[in-house]
Every structure is written in structure tokens, then in C-alpha cells.
Image 1: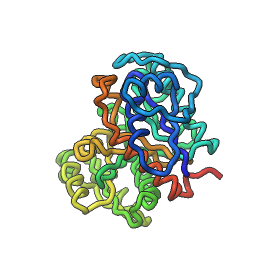
Image 2: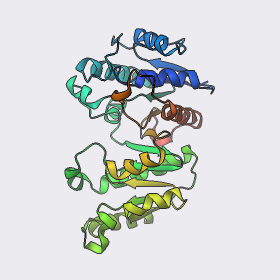
Image 3: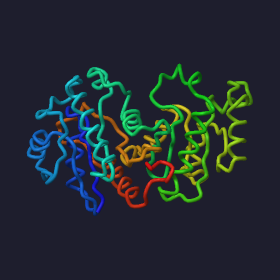
Image 4: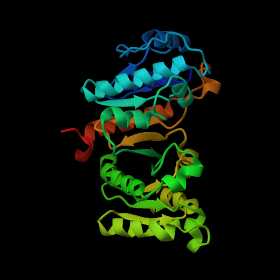
Length: 317
């Protein structure tokens, strides 16, 4: 029976609610252990008429009462502590996987947390520089070559190393996710993948040559594909996964296609981490409106990976 932790996210958002609703709706065989403040969870369980989990991993932070919708340093510090607690428990083999409810990046910034989000904290605390962010839902799988950086900086910060790592991590991960012979498409950077150089030369100068070299090395990769058509092709079976070159290029179509079922999977770690593909939803926090669908999907993915195992290249010696 895998033991799966669920860090409850920003206490002022919908994270505690979706964790409790996930706990109530879950019918699988894993042992679910929320990671967060027991008093906060007890109060929300009573307010929502939901069962109170038998076992809770509390961490060091205390945050017994939510201030719904508030962006605060205190909430950021608490949510970061609960993520750290879950990571440590996975590294110490006290948990077999971690599902993380949404945090607020602005609250983390106010609290002085030195990471732009979960992914970078996970990689740092796990001691790996080879990692990536895969989003999946309703058969669509999207890997990001760059993550949370301003759009104006993408072209300067995107290089061969970023695309190569994204392709390699996808190639390693997809068999564990039920795709033994994957077909990976790489997006172009510019509209229409540069349109023969008339809309930008990155595709001609280095992206297409890199994809040719990767294919020659044995990676099942094609491209660069125009981003305005490749996602349509993928949902109709032409590709098993897509490497998007920047955040919104990949996540806008993914969330349109599978918003309620989207799962974020961190690749390259020696531990299993998934999360729902939505944010803190401050506007509906405390109103009993949040749906647990995406968190349940993240939990099912974590349970699958806990059963199949991570790629050998990611695990610790």
C-alpha cells in the first residue's frame, strides 16, 4: 500500500478544501496523509462536513485559521514549510509520493522563499539539476523547455541544452506513464515555426538542426512544428507528447483541453511528485465551490508511478 502525502498548499486558498475533498472521494488502495496544520484541517473539515483524516503530517509551521483570499507572508511561509516536510518525508522513505496543492508564488516572495515555485524547490532539496515540468490530461502531454520566466526573456534563455533535457526526460518518463514507444513533437519558437525564416530564424539556425541530431541519436522526435496546429494533431493521435518552448505556449492549450483533469508531474527527481494543474483560486476560497477532480487525477498518477517505479536514471544510488 503506497503512502502518499498531500501538502495542503496556501492555507488562504482552496488547497485545504481540495485535499479534504480528495480524501473523501478517494477509493483506491493508497494510504493518504495530508501535510499541513491539523487545526486548520479540522476546522475546514467541520465547516465542509467532510471526514477528518486519521493521520496528518504537521510540519513545523502553525497556521490554524484561514484568511481566505489574502496574500500574506505568513501563508507563504507555512505552505513552503509543508512542502519541505513532504519532500523530506519522501527522501526518508516515510512517504512513497507527494501530491502538492497550489501555493501562491506572491506569498512565497513576500516570505522570502527563494524559489519561483514548487518545481525549483523540489529540484534543489532533492539535489538534482536535471529536472523538468510535464503537464498531462485527457491524453495530451506537454513538457516545458522553459518555465516561469518573462516572455521577453524566452529567446535569450532558450538553448539547445533546455530542449535536449526536455526531450530526454520525456523519453525516460513516458514508458512509466503507459507510453512504451513514444512519439515526441517539438514546437517551433516563432509563429508558424518561423515560416521559412520570414517570421524568425531560430528554427532554421539551430532548432531544426538540433532535432535532426536528437533523432539521429535515437530519440523519437520530430519538428519544429507550428504551435498553432501541433496540439490539435496530438489530441487526434499524431503525437504522444509535445515539448513546448515556453510556459503559455504549452499550458494554454493544455488547460483549454483538460483544465479539470490536468496533472503536473515533476520529471527527473528521485521522488514522485505530482500536483493539480490549477492555482489557489482565491476568488472562491472558503465557499465550498472548489472541485477535487484535478487533485484526484494527480493522486491517481502518483499512485501509478509509485507502482511502476521511476526511471532508474532518476533514483538515488
